[in-house]
Length: 394
Image (tube, rainbow, N blue to C red; front, side, top):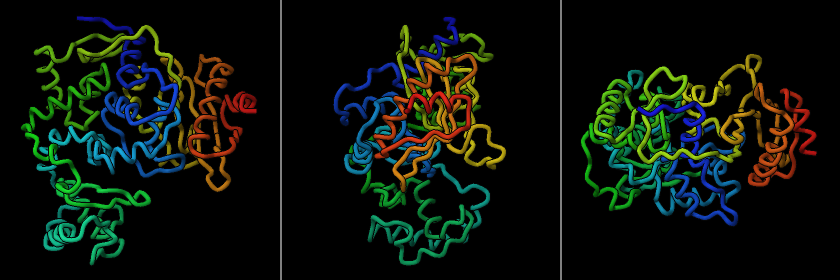
């Protein structure tokens, strides 16, 4: 069995996530976007927009400034990706659709909405008929959308019905209008070759998803691999053992890890990773918080839902990757009205040299401001790196 140091495991993970790839020297195009997607496998969606929508950030972190329209076109015009529940709400390459069919077929209402679905079957079926006749439609465009009441996040009953059909794979997101989903029948959204693909059974689909997760993570314990596509852990553990016994995964020991780890056969171990990147809280490199601690000795929690007086670092905090370490974090907000990027807090990790981190971080913050169309940057006073960063940005 191969032994890996924690530093080697970090470099394997970073390479698998695309951070060892050189950034484009010229104009970023769809080929660069596809390269990143081939590494990360999916992009998580989130409604928080204090800085930028979360699904745009992983491409910026790996490519630098790029036209966000490239991703929109890949999803809603080229139909190379589609929206679904994978790792939470996600953008996923259409080729993965057959591997997720079993999940859509097996979807059942969770406890607090089960009775609503049972009581409203006629209405729910009518919504699907209306989309069939008139789609694409948002929930608000239904003939009878209902008011904003009901069991799901205060949604209208039209939105409830649309989201239930979305869970079941009967409708897909055709496009978004101011981030509002506009739905159409799945057969009118996905490419024909995808719809006609063979559908593996549940076991084979889960095996394939675990291998995709291993490719995107490089190395991880069973819990890491299962979490990438939100697979049930007990069954995933069994399948990971099967894949290892067949040679599809390699079992390895990682320094300081209590559980066996598994490495994809194609995983690379670069000598170094000259990366520098601000990371979205929903970046696939760090969304598994326990794995982030194991790899980087970096404790990270998103504090959006923490009362302000109890926050340690801030509302929307982005870790900063430099080389193969997470060396700091910044609390950011796009003040669009004044066209400026607010750095409300800046923190350097213990043991890191603030001057070197601040110098590189300042460059990335300038690049981010330009990418977001913001004209200036303002640094607040919170954090042990704020003064140094303010000096660099002058």
